[in-house]
Length: 304
Ligand code: SF4
Image (tube, rainbow, N blue to C red; front, side, top):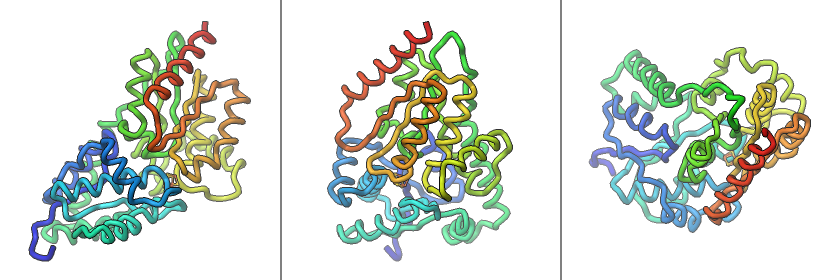
């Protein structure tokens, strides 16, 4: 590894993948675009992970294996410094990949070490230059996210809540947004990386403050993952008159499982149909499609 040129890679995460790739390249790094997630990626991840480990861990592990095989030797993994397993993914990835005999360097990036880490990767960059590039990356990320469509009373409006990776990566969620749009549904995916970054940096605006306050009443302290966000986003969508809600959760996700009864209660109180879709390596596309179509049909009839 020592005299080898560094080729960086990170796990795929939906439409954000290219944004992160461009950002790393803007720091002067050589970056390998993470390979697409396929059945093989899933199989590799499942084979080398503990059975009860959450599904996103398995996918990111499989993605790292395929990235190394494609020529990456410097892996970057986000470290949430939060309360669930995402905080420890990088350490377990490192351990597992070394046990498998791969040669690589793994860097865990978080909001505390990010500037120092980029400076280590490219010492010629000043901290001001790094901050400017991060700001440009933020602008690109916001462009990719776009804005939510307005709620359309004549059409079916469905909100999506759930675990961040599962809601954002089409290869994991079987491209749920596209499938819903093909059924003429207005989709409101509440999971966005910009919101996640703002929450981590405590830079959130006041838009959902009232819902956050109410959401806290359901919990006995911090939960981790996207659990808390899903509670207040469900309340927010309910007040805006959403027609249905889809809860996407990977097996065996602790925060998502914990909020299940809370989301059930909010939806029941607002008479909002709720479809819960647990996802893991045994998912069947046919089953997924049928459940989705039935759910949308049911809402369409209800609206009539
Ligand atoms: S949010 Fe759920 S799936 Fe994601 S790391 Fe935490 S426990 Fe695993």
